[in-house]
Length: 292
Ligand code: COA
Image (cartoon, rainbow, N blue to C red):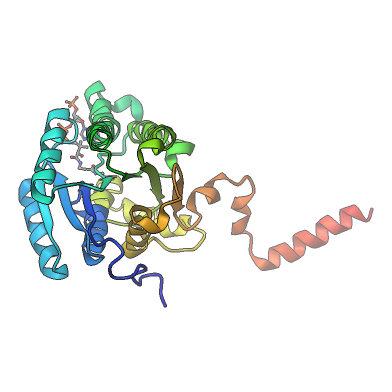
């Protein structure tokens, strides 16, 4: 068995209708593919309809499942409401909302225009709010139990320099996840989040580590497990969290980062750079002092 294997049984998502925002590429596409393989019907949304159509065709051919491409800019509430209506028209219901669409870029904060800051907040926080509110109202009105899964990041709670709009927005999404987990549980709506560490995708990597930065800052080196994540590992976790196997998990954020964020946090973690021989000398020095 390997961590790149598919985890759940083949019919784990049979009968479920799932909406994946930002499902046309990257991690959204990887999760969509696995949901289709597990028997779900999936609507993928983004601003770029042509890209969505190409992805939907590719995934339908590969999996034999049903994938519906829908244009929707999550920043605009009326577009989200229209998207929901299209999903209901096509599939008759919706069981899962995966808030995956995001926008991000690296920059010293003082170099950002007010509009640049807003753009990221609008996609990540307002977009997640728009989808969550529209779908939540529908589920509550129709008395349908459902699941919300939000993709956040470990810097939602640590904060991170140079991606301040994203950190600010993701912190809001995490607060929304935990708040609604309690408030909407009475309607049978679960809310959870995943905080992924480095899972390379072309889009995010080109954007966040442009030029030769990807070589200069080898993300695998920051991870105690000394590797980046495999897309299937994230898809396995997401499929579990939207499936009924996780029916008792509500309000949690599950970190999948090989220990990356904790490595940055522990005060003495930098001592990892000390080689074995030096530890021998240090031990002798420390013990010698104690014996004086
Ligand atoms: N650094 C600083 N400012 C930037 C920037 C950067 N790298 N990229 C865009 N901006 C600014 C623009 O200058 C503009 O501000 P201004 O009007 O004051 O000049 C503002 O952000 C909006 O840019 P625009 O290109 O009009 O926005 P958009 O809605 O078309 O694009 C982005 C949204 C900027 C997030 C774009 O990168 C995008 O669509 N990304 C795709 C999804 C994504 O980022 N996924 C996340 C993977 S981690």
